[in-house]
Structures are given as C-alpha cells and as structure tokens.
Amino acid sequence: MKLSGSKSIYLVMIMLVGGCTAVVQPAEPAATQPAEPAAVQDSPDWWRMLTKPLGGQQIPSGDSFAVIVPRTEIDLESEMGQIPTSAGIASRFYFFRCPCGKVKLLGDFLACDYEADEVLDALRAGKFTVTSMSPILQNTRPNLVSIRFQAEGEGADLVQTLKKALDGVAKHHDASE
Image 1 (cartoon, rainbow, N blue to C red):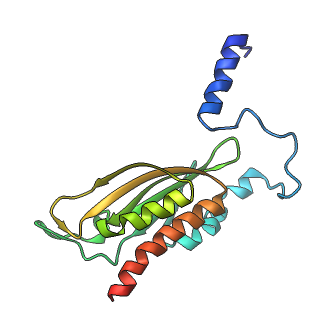
Image 2 (tube, rainbow, N blue to C red):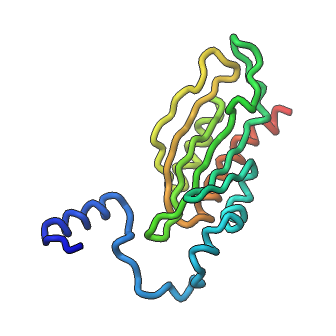
C-alpha cells in the first residue's frame, strides 16, 4: 500500500504521539541483547518466569498474559456481610508485547484506602501512568480502591515496580499480625 506524502507524515505523527516506535526498528538486534525468536521470548513459560516474583495466578492467552493476585489478607465486611476473596477481591495485571518490542502493561491494583499512597508512590517511581482511582464498593471495612494504570518498557523493570507496590501493601499487614 502506497501512502501519499501527507498521509505518511500523519501516520508517523500518530505513531510518535502514541509512544510506539513500531515504525522505526533497527536493522539488527543490539549487541548487548541476545536475539531470541519471538515465539520463545513470548511463550507462556517465558511470561511465567518473568512474572513469578508477583505470585498469584498466572493465566496465558493468545495475545496477553494475566497475573491475578488475590487479596487474601483482607477481612472484608460490608452491610451484605462477609465478602470472600473469590468474589473478585484481587489485583489484576495484563502483560503483552507491542510490535515495537516493548512489553506493555495494563493493570488494576486493588488497595485498602490506607495503602493507596504507598501503591501510587511505587507506580509513579516506576514511571507508570496512573489513569484512575476510585472506590470499588460502598460501606465496607476496610475501604477498597481500584488504582488503574498503564506502563511500557522492559518486562523485568515493570515487574520490579509492581513487586515494590505489592511489598508496600504487604508491610501494612505484616505489622498488624
């Protein structure tokens, strides 16, 4: 498909504004990184190894890899009574690879209101973009918030940032036990 000059400039501008460098790729892989076939690098086993420090349930799919970390340490009560962890009381992280080679991450971090600052600080320190924050339920003890975010970069760096946020949350509960 041949694009006219103005259409190709417009396409390049969209790609640059969107943060994706899929249009501009080096001819050869960098000498410091081993050239791995994409199938091996993005295999379910590779994603499991990358995300193992996060714990939780790991779910591969065709285009992404999910990690669901249940909040089993929370004793959640509401006007409805006890709410079990299996009712969706968990953080969810979705990893996938962009055609440009970067690992992308979309997530929903579930935190108690008193943990939110710790989570936000860890995510922002890792250069994550926090897209929203809101309560997930009404009239609960403790109050829970959903912190939605997105990020891109090297997979190990993304996992390290999430691990710091999870460790920050865990210290609130280790101290109270």
